[in-house]
Figure (cartoon, rainbow, N blue to C red):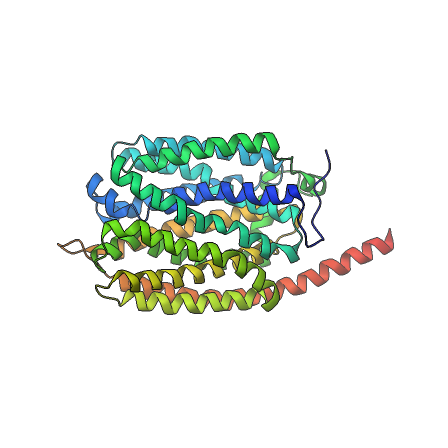
Length: 424
């Protein structure tokens, strides 16, 4: 079996295309499992007879358990073949999602989301580590652009279908659909994916806990982790209540939600690869700033919108989705360049943990800030939007220093390699 080596050419091999596709589809199931919660909020809250606060608990339960799990596994993330790690955690994710599909009440669902989070929350970081191991830095924006299509696809295919199934067959049915798809993907990974273990040859920390400690205490890594906290705040604060705000405040029909998520997903599907390619030309940080500015403006407009027609709501959602895609693609690419290869799994796992924990807190705080009127319209949703706008500005400033530091570090690493070759 040939060793996996970083791509230095522009054209991808068939296996590299397969890896992009299978990891994108794997991400699709993970993202869909989380994303479907938001649009189903308008269906699940009355069905389970829970208020926004309890719904926020269900969302944050996944995030908290995922964050804790990622922290505990960070030290071991670089000690095993990444394929085996992916299969282990994907198995747990399938089991947890199945439990969601057979949940009968709030307490059962809460436990099921915890189980799902314990395993599902680590998969994204494993996937990012695998892609970073295989592809060179100059190709990662393009790769991330394609992988980001999973986010858009979850809206184009998964969410509309999930909403239709939830309406016709009950809110549990979308989770069972995800289980069926995940089992197929699991089998494909077992059969066709090669081991990913080149990182095992350059491990310096033999003890997993020492490795985790070193990862958590490097100043540059800490700077990146702090920016991740702010990056996570926006999505977890706003997304859980997006559908409820659209239906109860903007007076959008529940029947219009599948179409809304379909078209916004299409906009992200088109934008993902284009943003990944374009960011290589204009610069990843510049693209991140453009996406951040557009996100902030759109969020503020959306927060102050009253009852509106479908076309206006759709336009704003498409603009917001494109801007979010720009932020995710560029920030993910920048983050893959922060750690050394020997630290990549631990860094990505820790970064995922911090993202989930910060997101869990954000979802919980969001549920505490937002409340319902007698007519089920949401109160203080605009406050959340202003808080998120502030985090967007601060994050853009922090990412500037991270991007600048990466360029300096890359020069230092390249110089060190040249010196090592000369000495050898």
